[in-house]
Image (tube, rainbow, N blue to C red):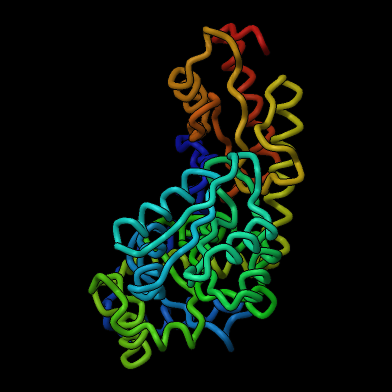
Length: 369
């Protein structure tokens, strides 16, 4: 990063490498064979991360991760289906809102923002309502950083003969998910998260049989994953204008991902970042919202200092002036702020970020620090 550019300690968009940014300096023809090969290579590499080439298709889609979530629900849940939405944060609530807007029948199960949904909860809910056809789950809830027990929940859903849709926006590429061990109809992620690409492209790993039977389900032309996949399989091209520069950047980011050592290495770097962050902030007296057992190494929510001189906006601007962009809290009952552990950053930059936080809180004369 140029010293003039702040480091983004956010859950995406996030700090990217110079190689990834440089990849966007080339213009691509959207129907050109070289670009089609780039898309095909991208999908192949993405499928490899989840060991999903035999069982799932990778369907890329223009837009942010939320576009892909809406496309997955709209395409893979029949219009007479019913979705059980598991909620312990803002993005679970967004899933429910998507079902409402699309006119899909749904029910919700909500736990506290620091309480994971359990497999026992899901088993009980599915026993109580036979009309449920699909369960939608946030793997890592970005509003807090909480990690839900995906594998256990997935196996309960399979035992009931139901279908699972996973929002893995903040976990894919850093936390292991094997499509041969975790049964799901859809897993959804995006370019601007743990793969360290730039925002603008979502993608859905759709179980081949589920996608094949999804013709006519979608409420939308642009978000119809069945049509998108059918057209791409036939022609090698996107149906509508693709985000060419975003695709090129993600392809370059994946080359670096594999050079680094793939998922194990990416997970380890983020885990190291998270450990540094938690330890250094604890020395300042700043407490994390979640206990360690359910804290994913993606983003950490911290309790704000209990001092009338602390105001997040001033805090944010002062930390930004020192070279780091943080994230506001997203909890309704507790005042917090969030610090991301992901992106093209390492332990040294995490130490520097906490040092900047300490300087700012001293400048603001916040007495807790």
